[in-house]
Length: 121
Image (tube, rainbow, N blue to C red; front, top):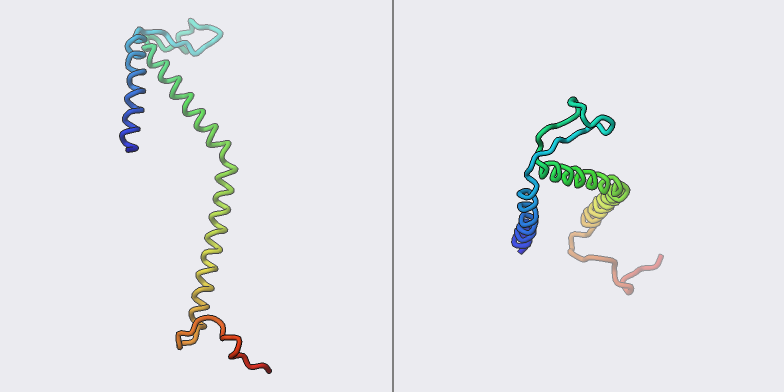
């Protein structure tokens, strides 16, 4: 089911991107110098416009993902601490179970004796 949903979403994205690419296939010059756009050292000539659009979308997705990842650092750190603490408590519980099993008498009786079987000192 998830594969079908993934394919439907990818198909919808393709329906949008293919016409966008065909409509913007003419070439443009990409100037990276805002003060002198005619500077040939910082100008990329003859780039299809849809490459510029897709590259800017890709850079935006990467920058947004890095920003979200950086903001979630506190929660990841807390999860690591809690995981270590849980592992420590699980290990201690396993050790106590082993100690309890080792101290049990071989008769198979588990737990404390009945209240009537006590002998007072």
